[in-house]
Length: 49
Image (tube, rainbow, N blue to C red; front, side, top):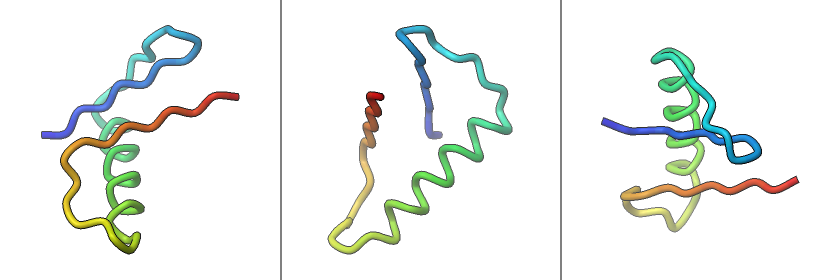
């Protein structure tokens, strides 16, 4: 099963199963729709603002 960890300013945000599932499935679906993406083994996203 997929695992998602979200940190804001270094602090991990607690998520229940529903938002974890929504976020994870949305990101996976977006990436699978991109060209040249064969297999998703590990996804890392870092956003700095």
